[in-house]
Length: 217
Image (cartoon, rainbow, N blue to C red; front, side):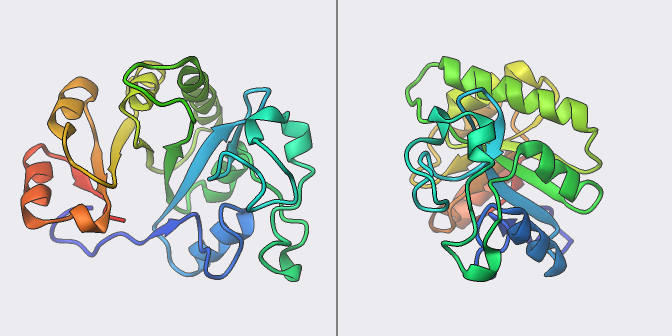
């Protein structure tokens, strides 16, 4: 993330080549493999509990069906999030944000990507609820290590800034870097997270001029 030092190793959803993504087993394997940071995805259950899950639906990575946001936490925690990957991971659960922070405390930094299905130019209620829920868990955890809150959605980052005035915010981009400067001025970004195909010398130089850390994926 900075010049003059070796690049950070960040486990994307943990170590998904070796364990089911976004599970405690995957995060633990990433730590054993030498990850400096963990990247994962945070979304809400029906009762506004922040869980670690990439997809909007449960179908791909659990034995559940339908939107995660339609189920309360107690039901989500009963799902099997490991058997789809391999029988030895049977019984792995969808982790809560609290469980993730407990596992990583003092061992690694964490990049929490905010996931909501509400898109558009304005902040939506679901984004506000997610930001507030994440803030509450982080405040209670007293996590010993760096945390970055990231999103592709500028409104989601706006909600995060309102809920967490001192948070490190990261702006994700997969197709364009348009609006990076405006987002930095409005939100006070900490980092820029471009897809590798966007990581040209010119774009990276622009991010550096803004004083942003770089997390290329």
